[in-house]
Image 1 (spheres, rainbow over the protein chains, first blue to last red):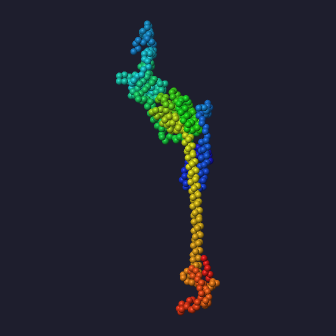
Image 2: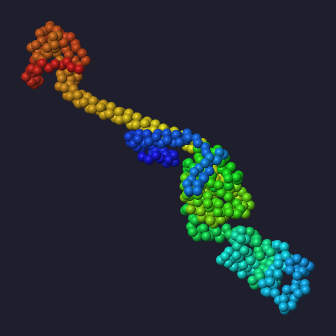
Image 3: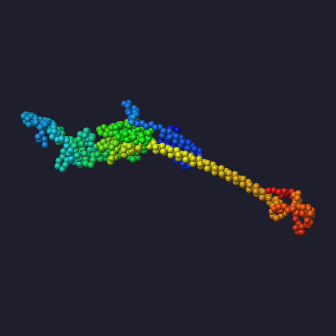
Length: 73
Length: 417
C-alpha cells in the first residue's frame, strides 16, 4: 500500500468511523477496520507533530532549475 | 492666437529676403507645415478638451485616430500607441470624453491635429468598458465557467504566494498563516503588482510557479490601492495565466467595490490577503480537534462493537443453557411419565384409592383368610400409614362376590419413592 497523504489518511479514518458507527459489521471485519483506523490515527497524529515553520522564496536559476531559499522572515 | 509670439519662426519670416517673401525664395511645403507645427505647438500648452468622439479608428500599428467634436466644430485627434497602451480601453463613437493633449500640426497632411496623451470618459466609462470587454473574452473562452472552479486542498503542505515582496499583503499572509498553522510552508514568488510592467511580471511569476509545480495552492494578490494601482489584476494576460495555473488559486486583490478580473478567474476569491491566508491554511487547532474527535469516535464505536459482541455471546450462552434445560426437562418428563406408569402398577397406588393391604409384621402380604391366625397381630397398610391390628375370626365372602383365584404375585415390592 502506498503511503497516504494526511488528507487521505483523515478521509479514510472518517470513513472507517462512520462504518463502525453503523454497528452492523461482523466482528472480524470490525476488528480489522478498527486496527486500520488506529493506524490512520497514528499517522495523522504524527503528521501533526512536525512543526516546521518556513517562509521561503522561489528562485529560478539561469538553467531553469528551481530552488527555495529561506526568507528568514 | 499666435500673435505676439516671437519665438520659433516668427522673427525670421518678415526679415529681408527671408524665405518665402518673394517667388525666388519660395519655400517647400514641408518647410511651411513644419513651421506651422512649431508655431502652433509653441502657442498651446497641454490642454484638457471636452468633446464627443467620432470616427474612431485603431490602426494596426497601435495608434488611435478619431475626431473630437461639438455642435459647431471638430478637430482631428491622434493617440500614439505609447499613450494608447496606458488607456484601459479605446473609446466608442459618441462617447463624451475629456482629452488631455497638445495642439499641433500633422505636417504630412497639413492638418491641425490634437495629440492626446490621456483620455477619460464620463462615469469611468473606459475602465468599465475595458473590464467588460476582457470579461466577455474570458467568458467566451469558458474561463469564467463556475464548473471550472476547483476546491482548495484541505491540508496543503506548501502555499505559493505571488505578490510584491515589500507590500503589506505579504506581511499579512505570513502572519495569518503562521498563526493558523506552523507547519505549512509559504513560498513567495515576488512580482511587481502595480505600474509599468506589472502584468508581465505577474504573468512571469505564474509561469514560474507552473514550471516549478511544487506547491498545493496559490495566493495571488496585493493590498488595497487606487484603481490604477490594482489595474494589473484586470489584465487579460494575467487572467489567462491564472486560469491555466495547474494548482487551485485564490485571488486576493484588496479593493473596495469592483471585482477584479483575477477574482473572476481564480478558483476562490478572498476579500483581502489575510482572508486568503485563512482560506488556504487550515487552522492547526481545528485539525487537532478534528483528529481527536475522530479518535474518540473510533474508540467509542469499537467499544460499542465489543459490548455488542459480549451481549450476543451471553445471549448465546443463555440460549445454550435454555436448550440444555429443555433437554433435561424433557427427560425428566419422560422419567416422570414412566414413574407414573410404574406408580399406577404399584400396590401402593391401590392404597391411595382407599384399599388396604394386610401384612404380617415381617412384611409378607396376607391375601387369604387362611393366612390369618385369630389373635395374631398383623399390620394394615393404608394410604397414609400402618395400623397394627389383631386378627379375629374369619369367614368366606358372601356368595357372588368370589374373587378371582388367589393372586400369587405377592413378590411385588410396594416400597418405592
